[in-house]
Length: 145
Image (cartoon, rainbow, N blue to C red; front, side):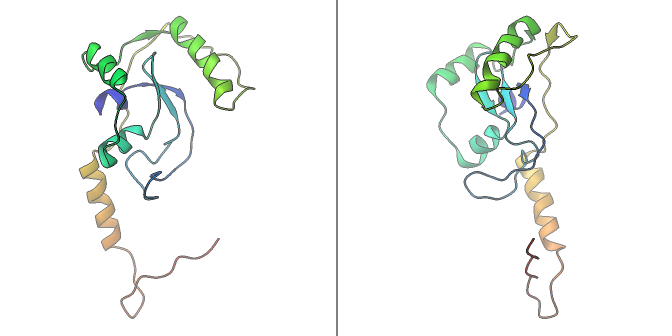
């Protein structure tokens, strides 16, 4: 989980999404479809949630790759990263994206601030308990947009 959480963000999508299986919110909901990489593999930012919650299977090649790196996302040079970025953008539908430019020479992996599943579940449970109810004790129906 920590390896997947520490990948380099290739495309940062600012949106809030939901679990692709249950439709519920989860700890990676903000920016969930952002693309993350370790320089070799590419995954969605919410992939750790799918692994953690739904126990999806990982390809053996990915497991071998992560183990060979001792579970540490490598620091990569911008010279290594830029061609992957430039190649990936059109493949994900962003053909008009400008080529990668950065003043940095290296990208150092930094784990993103994501609550643990237990922390997230506790907050969601507290929010659920504090939701207003109508006079008969039933939940209010949300307004339609």
